[in-house]
Picture 1: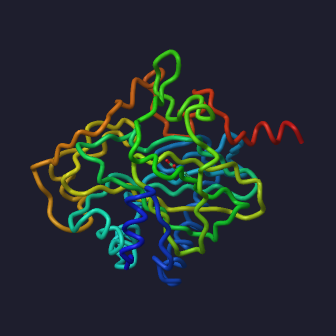
Picture 2: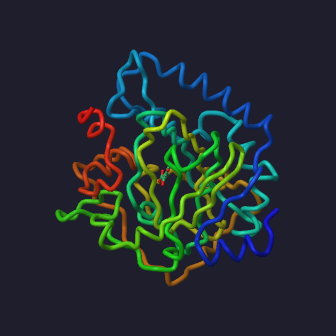
Length: 302
Ligand SMILES: O=C(O)CCC(=O)C(=O)O
């Protein structure tokens, strides 16, 4: 469980790191599932509802940058988020009633794993209040080398910056982040496999290209207090199909039909260029932010 200091740090800084969220046995189960998922990518030509492939992907030598929505693929991922070591600390931050918004497994593979440019998750999925966060379960040890998640402290209390380009299209990243954010203050979150990062939905964060020889796979759950209702999201296809489905997404506690409305700043995530919604990696390439470079640049320079 979290100490009072941990809870205070989350509210003060907008992020924390939690040791030993998962048992080694649970970690092994996830890794075994992931091995099968990677094997099934062989022969798949282009990104689909399961895989988001790197630009350098080929069907013979698959390069996966994200496994989409693992919760929809296997019951295991419901069990993981409901593990006491995972959901217990999250209830200390969000209260007893928690709903799942989305899940994703970012692979950041050794040698080429894609960067994620500076952004706020809130820009993708604003809610009626901001008791919303992303919990990232580390499947590998994470250190300075393999592209740790980096968060700029205290930004969860600040404005929602534009994630749109000059033409008014949503590009999923903060254009000109180097001028608009205090990037020197960014704090990398390191930890062992089985530990967990937690960042507030409004906190500015990003991570670099992984040129190291070690993978950095993180299983993210995007979750909210039950009384935070989504206002809009294209990126997950506004995934609640109907009220029953919305109810089924409760991880723990009770659903409510009384959203808590708070005076939170909101900018809607759209329009998308050509109406095309391919997730964060693809949409960020439509922006001009290249803070972390790209594999193509590096490979081209080699
Ligand atoms: O995988 C990472 O380092 C960043 C994840 C993230 O911010 C996202 O997928 O929205």
